[in-house]
Length: 465
Ligand code: BGP
Image (tube, rainbow, N blue to C red; front, side, top):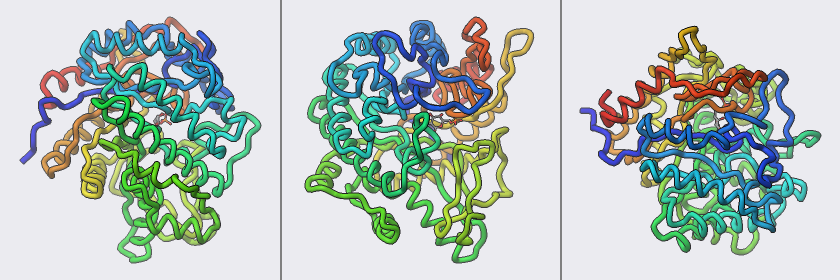
């Protein structure tokens, strides 16, 4: 029997600062690595985005009309500390204070990500996450936010998709002229981020005793391509290296054996200084946030470059690693227009696995379908594919709840249209349409999509729509 959603289930929706705010150089904001990135040709950049920075009141009013109980967004580090450390920009803090107050005014719970891909460029110039000093810079930044907003924000997320940052560094954040970091550097960055995250979680508990904090990784399940034992091992290895090893560190503060031997065999082990593991262990998450989009199907590596191919429709993310795994097609699932596998059952499976491994409450902080939504002549957006996608995933969340998994919230991507990481405005995710083109800003008006009215009914009926 399907269990109903808990009464206090956090029905939400998500965005991130650089993808929605615009105002990239206003009110004292410093430059982030994103501001310094090269954009794929023909796609909108992030300078104006959805101009949420200026439209936040109107947008939050719409979120209220949608019925959101929670809004997950990120704070731009560079608005608070333009140079990443040092002088605080009061205008930046004041902006987020207004946003948080506006949300609270409507009874919408703010779920705040400390850092969503937009590392301050000033820190990047000093080595970014390769530089150990970034650990304390992050902790200092987190402290500023906890001290200022600690009595208003009850759910914090540390680092968005640390595994994407490490496994696909080209996906976000390599500034113009920069080169792709080596694996050795990436696993050093990973280690530093974990120590930084541990310190931020401890600080949160010390400074905001009523708040909860957790990591937000991109989690999924790997299917083996055939019943060949070598495919099963490859799928298990890749699921561990891609997901579990990050969460095992965040939750238990230890490098799992598979990750450590993988690093040792390749000569990629990071330098672990005294106190690092303690800092990671002391920062205990209160819950786990997961971003879930699709599953992958994995076969044994052929040991050469034929293992590597770009994720469908997205040249920035290469999948496959010689000696580790090779991606295969899954004939049993459909795909989005952008080639992403649609697999709601995979969400149930992933929720079960995460819960069984850590026994911590789970919130889904991203899940959604990117599509080139069309504004019709009568001013509507008929995005029935989005309704179908989310409905199917909600049903699987209900199955996971019935399996006994503690899921306490769902924040699909995205509350409103945002700039996609690589496909600009051609690929939209929101419940609210933002009337702008790739380069033609039009009137930036907000238009409710069909999925808006549908999600509104879902929330009012607590998932019984
Ligand atoms: C996640 C990121 C988001 C968002 C989403 C959709 O990995 O956390 O920032 O962009 O993916 O991806 P895309 O915009 O590439 O379609």
